[in-house]
Image 1 (cartoon, one colour):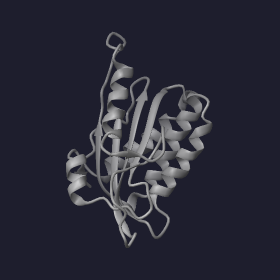
Image 2 (spheres, one colour):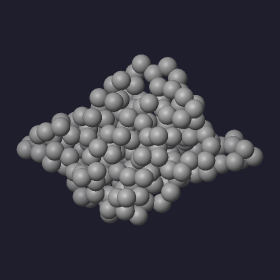
Image 3 (cartoon, one colour):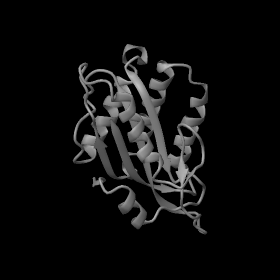
Length: 186
């Protein structure tokens, strides 16, 4: 499952990029699925707390059954790599922010894109189409709660990515259109 949210962000005040960086910095001490599930829940909740900033979103899913499970890990890694390669430079490793853009001299507002790539065991209700902000809110609420069920054992993998990540960097409309054509306006 891949969920992407584009939102307005302001470098001059508390922003989603700082929030995601703080969440990611705590992930360095992860020791298992329970910690990974907390990371998923925290990042979903952080996005929910910024609903007023949402502009666009996208969801894509791959479903597998027990007879078609040999490609799950490869497909998860492929989905994460596709997102990671949209940017020239990796600023922080693992659950990280990315930046291929030049810093803005004013250091003010920009669009920010947060991507969550998740592998969950079982049938997730979060695998639904996003047509509006209500659908996105439902998907993020489902992910945040499902992540914590069964002591987090159902979260098999998770990548949390966002751009921009360096203070003052601004994403242009052209970069958004070319890197995120699947985004739907909310």
